[in-house]
Amino acid sequence: MTRRINVLTDVVANQIAAGEVVERPASIVKELVENSLDARASRVEVSLLRGGKGEIRVSDDGIGMGREDALLSLDRHATSKISSSSDLASVRTFGFRGEALPSIAAVSRLNLDTREADQGVGTQVVVNGGRIDTVEDSARQRGTTVEVRNLFFNAPARAKFLKSVSVEVRIASDVLTGLALANPRVSFSLTSNKRSLLDLPAVDDAAARVSQVWGSDQGGTLILARAEGSGLEVKGLIQRPDAAKPGRGRRYLFVNGRPFKAPKLVQAVERGYSTTIPQTARPWMFLYLQVSPGVVDVNVHPTKAEVRFAQDSQIEDLVERAVRSALEDEKSSATFDRELETPRLLVHEPQESLELSDPPTDAQMALFLAGSEVGDLTEGQLVSKPEESRPNLWQILNTYILAETRDGLLIIDQHSAHERVLFQRLMDAFEAGGRDGQKLLFPLTIRLTTPELNLVEELRGLLDRSGFEVEPFGGDTVILRAVPNPHPYFNAERAFREMIDELTHGSDLVRSAKNQHEKIAMTFACKGSIKAGQQLADIEMQELFDQLFSTDLPHHDVHGRPTIIRLSGTELARKFGR
Figure 1: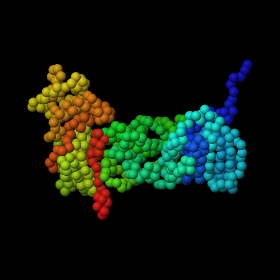
Figure 2 (figure 1 turned 90 degrees about the vertical axis):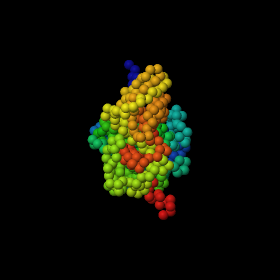
Figure 3 (figure 1 turned 180 degrees about the vertical axis):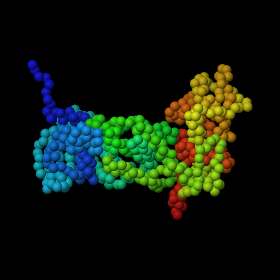
Figure 4 (figure 1 turned 45 degrees about the vertical axis):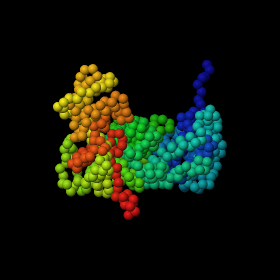
């Protein structure tokens, strides 16, 4: 009988494994730099020629290897990171499979040059297409250098799938940036065709690393976010809503010091931003999760870019809560200040915890004069506090309210502020079962289009719970018997017409809502709030001010615009040259 099953040679097996591990030059950069970090390197240098198609060189000052380990590292499934299957539950290193180096060597010409500190001489190993050609002594300092040349020279079909040089360089740069953000205390550099692309000296914290990569202006747009519970912890940096723009947002996630991708966690962040940014905005995020080793499985895919959590929903809720909590703080508000203090987020080694400096305050009103506190407010209720403990308020242009703070000035958009107040008031009312409107002495008769009539009938229950008592009146007409009364200047008929028009035909605001409750609350807040140009009495300004700061997110309106812009005394002094 003819035998049909053959045992593959090591060379062929490694080339097959390389198909999963080595997709492009960036894959090699990732694997080699992770090895350097596992070797406790304090500096990692990466250089590319022709986008990595010609050469990839990664050099470090880590612990290095002796000759025997250098040769073993080129064997499949040879690793110093784990020794048994039980170790997979508590992997702390980047690498552990023992596949990367032999897979890379199988599809390239590789030169491995390494030396341990206690060895008098280093070792250089030259590999061609998975076959070791030479092993000889090398004169070098402690550490390891790996040179990978002629990638896919023996797999030309795979080489055809590589992108242009510029694209391959960008992808490799993104990979290295992620590892640099995870390890700010390590120095990194990247050159392409001898041109420097990244030069990142070691720093103490993640925010400083962000500023190194993208500039201090971007670093100044970040605020601290954190939450913990049930043995889980997330700490990180997110972008102020006013700084979030459309386009490609910088989004990096780390678990126990390991970069990874998780679309569901990104979605959890976006849920946390709900009603604070426009629908098209893509805020930056740098989130560091600390979980017990048994909670996360990193052995999901050979590239280790994906992980699996035992508590997916809890972690998503934790991330959303961390973002929401950060956006409640006054530091999330827009500012006129040009020189902003970058927050500090101390990132230790992967096996250690994270530490935040300058944690967010829980007291919204701590920025005002001593003793100023605001409790829960109901509609029309004013806070009874000594006059001297409350900020002075001024209205300018019949649109903005100025408030003095401990260290500067707040400029409040009265329309946006009232939007936030009305939105939260109605959402709270929905949760409590709805609210009654004010009965009209003379009910309003309103003609609508057929689509509008259909929508009113569909949403009649929600409209009733929001305070609009609406009934069919025959033909194309409805009758309003009761309406909300959010302020003395409220035009019920105009607000109702505009609400129904926007709900029928759609808008960015309506499309950003998560459900029908939010759609009603958003459109009512927009159409029913105090308008720009409306003169307010002192007591009305004070009531609006107090009620704004009793909401969960006082610094952001429902369109994703700021309700408040800060101007610090320091910036004022700078403008006046003091």
